[in-house]
Length: 292
Image 1: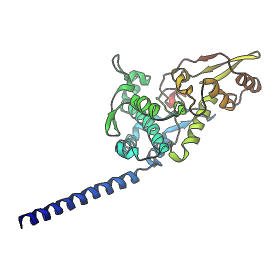
Image 2: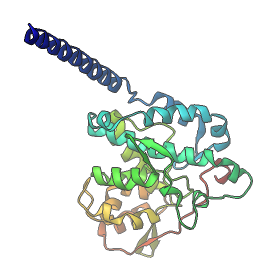
Image 3: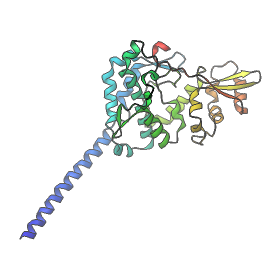
Image 4: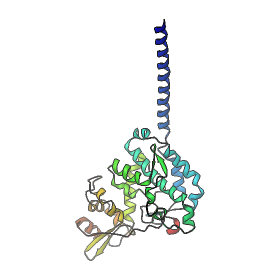
């Protein structure tokens, strides 16, 4: 009788535990499915606060308006922070990468907004002014992501550059400086990611203030953004067809000569390769509309 009751008790306990586990798994699956990979809230916010230049090659942020919409930014970022590592691991590669790019750009916006008073008072002119002698702004752990406290460097260097073979991200990650690539006025999404990254490369290389082919007679040189100097190795690994910076410039030659008066000479220079490559000084001023 005792043994029988013990077995019954064990069966009941195991049944209850199984039911609880099933419920947890169902909830987790439902939660994962509920994440908005269209980033509707974040997308609407970007459309409202990102201003595109007349030539469509640059953008700036209306930070004063963004400060007034801080609650909307926080809601969008809260959705990012609520994603668990287990949930993230269940996504496809395009969903993962678009999520991380949006997170990097979104939390960069938060860093500026949280310190807007310093910019407003003139105590800060650049995101670099938000750091200290001992700590850069990119090393500050001020947000939660994938179950842990993180900083911006973690997303860029420990996640994106480590987990993906995608050098074009350097035209998509925006650290709130004038010389950065243009911040898109829309979120990156899995369905459109390849086209969006290609568009970012085109926009970045088409802007002569950031990247250009300088003609000197029949010779010439490339004067590129410092981003290509800092991350040159990412464009030399054979990823996305790039084994050198010459490969990058050749692939996007149409962008480099866009609207230039000596386009054919520039094309010939790019096609020959082995021309000198220099790098421009980086303008670290805030990418605010006041600095258009």
